[in-house]
Length: 333
Length: 49
Image (cartoon, each protein chain N blue to C red):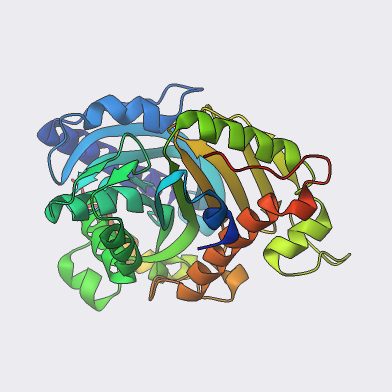
């Protein structure tokens, strides 16, 4: 195995993608700098059919790849992090709707899947003829809220695994079915990031705008260690390692986002689509919740913990003890 | 539901909780050590042609 040989594998994959893209009718484009990719690919999804790749973004991104060091017939192999061209396949899955699969064409072909349960719920509610309105990444109305919650709670690791393996089999044509079966030459999936959100949809936009402004004013100190300790349920001591800060960000949403970081995760609160107040816990390392990162099962204890975090955060943000300088009168009705 | 919801329930028309974005990393475990890839790689080179 040599450097030219490894490069040739990646080149062959380039040719394969070009040929498949032609068959699928999906353009291969470079994503524009400074623009959110989700916004950029939006027009490609307008006429998307089920299980169709709609666009492929080719971009230089970091990946852990196998490199060969040496010359002629003496090569040393090692893994290293490099910026290489990777393919982001934006597609419309039968069950999960809009999603993205990133494949690195260099050995060992690492991959990343990006899914969103809102699209999964939209498909499930559509199949059950439940009326709903979903202008973006949020449901503003739903004909059967109880069923919506029941569906949301019913997702399993098997739903994720089935979808992930289906697309990884399609998009990594390096192995035969018997190699996948007998030599375990298939991708094993691990949680890289999980976001869990509580959504409150208000009747009137003005009421939520007023509430959101007051929440920001009254909770500028939510990032203090003592308050983060209340949210996360653990003391911040001198041995603490990791990010510990609270920021107010402009994520090009109607209102600013207030986000508190803790270790490998964060919790944020913001207004979505003018009517929805979302509190969202994010974990970049589910092992923080003492659950394995593998996708053998949905990390139920992590989900419970993230749900609890959202509740703690909401309660702390609205606790009268946190609003010493502002009268606690958030009622908006 | 929590105290926040109870306080504002007159103004709220829908409440639900679910996963938002889920990112999954995919790794081919037999290839995570360089010494295990040498035998496999020669076959792989021809698969996409």
